[in-house]
Amino acid sequence: MNAMLAFVAAAGLAGGALTMQAIDRVSAAAPGNVPAAIQVADNGDGSAPAPRRIIIGLDLSKSNPLIENPAFASKVAVRIANEVKKLGFASEVHVRTFGNFDASSNTFYFDTVISTRARPDNVAAEIQKLVSGTPLLVQRGKWVAQDSTNIVAFLDNAVSSIGCSGMPTTVILASDGIEDSEYARLTLEDSRLPPPEGHPFKGCAELQILGVGQGTRSPVETMRLRTQWMHWAQAAGFSHNTILNDW
Image (cartoon, rainbow, N blue to C red):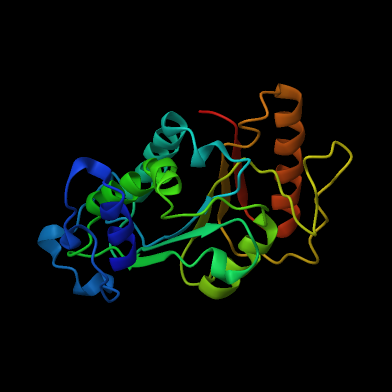
């Protein structure tokens, strides 16, 4: 988390210093280790929420309005933060940036476990600041806009390294969905996503893509992109998919 806080603080987001205590790197807190007095029962039946995993991918490619439109970035940030707020103790949160395929283009990462020292509301608030501040981070050179968009490769790398086993896992991409890589050039009308081999993401609970078609200003193009990702996600093995242009 140190890297994330350094980026945000250096960019001057939130108008002041951010406290490291807001989100700290902590060891996993097994549900049995969480004092009963602070277990929040918001399942409606007196039970604490079961642990979940959220993998958040921020698309820094030049076609994605997230990197230059503060209003849109703020809207995405609120939706992602609301997902994090729902997490129970021992849940995992992972944040990555993506775009170009080479690892040196995207060195940012953040991993934490929801616990008494990294509570859902606090983690959500800091991630909201980060996502809403993406345009400023790019403007000030803290993050670099990417020349390509490797969405499929990012998903493969993220799920291979972090995994979907052990707890329900949702992958959330803040992306326009325009794959621009060796796999496909979705800027071209006749280009299609390649069918996945087997079910590489079987066991993953959900794929969310927030902002599909944003920037194209075309409802027809947006529908084409949404349809492609819905079919791809189902074939790839995700149990559910939520592919949104707006909300």
